[in-house]
Image 1 (cartoon, rainbow, N blue to C red):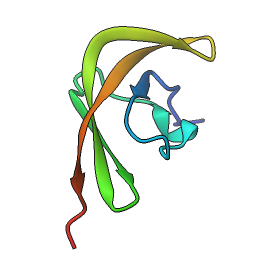
Image 2 (image 1 turned 90 degrees about the horizontal axis):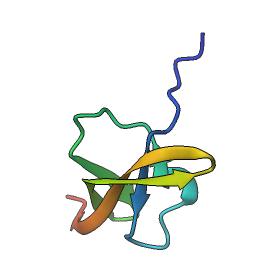
Image 3 (image 1 turned 90 degrees about the vertical axis):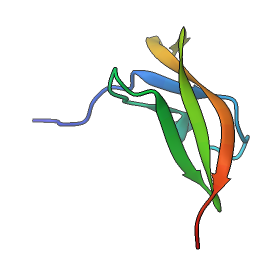
Image 4 (image 1 turned 180 degrees about the vertical axis):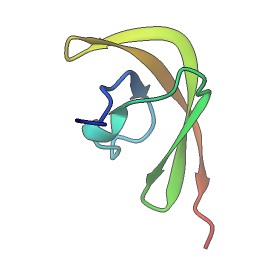
Length: 72
């Protein structure tokens, strides 16, 4: 049995260095914010009421808001 879930969310905005495979992911319906480690910082994306068609899937849109530095 395959436990991997199909992507249902897409991350829009933020740094160009964030890879395409990091931009589509599965997120619980109650998720309000997603943080992605990108180099020496965390990129923050918040849920929107929008959807987007990506690779023939309709995905919930999370938009970039800001970043925080990784603590040392």
